[in-house]
Image (cartoon, rainbow, N blue to C red; front, side, top):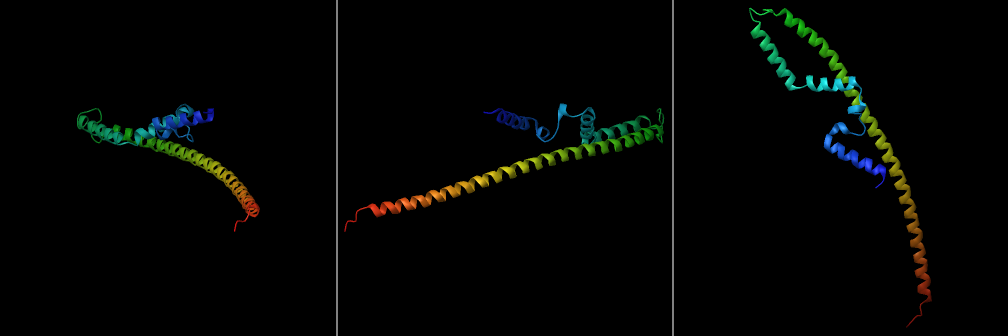
Length: 159
């Protein structure tokens, strides 16, 4: 087995173990910058049902404990400030996550294009080889017909 084949087999086995993020066309783990890894983590965390439910629990707990006598009584001015800041940060984080998703899509598209070009070149080579083999086969077939005709002419005729 050649080194290229071994690398190919190891990539296939890694992709089966680790899932789609081990796609050979997409940078992952240590190949990513710190900001890209953070954007992926934030996107995965803030875009989940767990985040939604945790936010609802936090808001409910804040309102219950600060209803009339807490450090932020109704109308919850501090809570509004926190939520406004969170919304501003979430907007920026969502843009960063969208940019990262576009980058992943671009890397996948680039890999698909390279694969398609390689496949096209391979098909063209195979087609040329097939045409050469077909011509060679036809030439051998014609030669066999001529040899059979000569042999038929050399046979004694028994009547």
